[in-house]
Length: 92
Image (cartoon, rainbow, N blue to C red; front, side, top):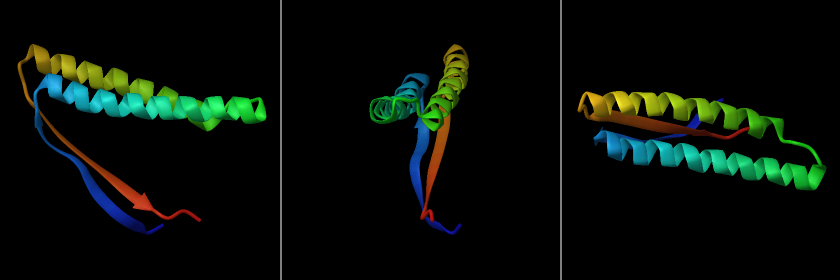
């Protein structure tokens, strides 16, 4: 599938507090989105949205990994360079 657009979402140097705010907020918003998707599926169809539940689990693992990196950066008094791109494609 052809990439329609590649967008530079985050690109900069951040201290551990700033990085925590940016990265964990992004993850938590995505987790909440998937929780709403699952809740909607439960209400409409009487069953869980397995795709949403799987994504929630993946995101929680990402939060754990990010938190570990942020704690290490804080202890070492290091800044973090964060680059994040999103690719947008049409899907058939």
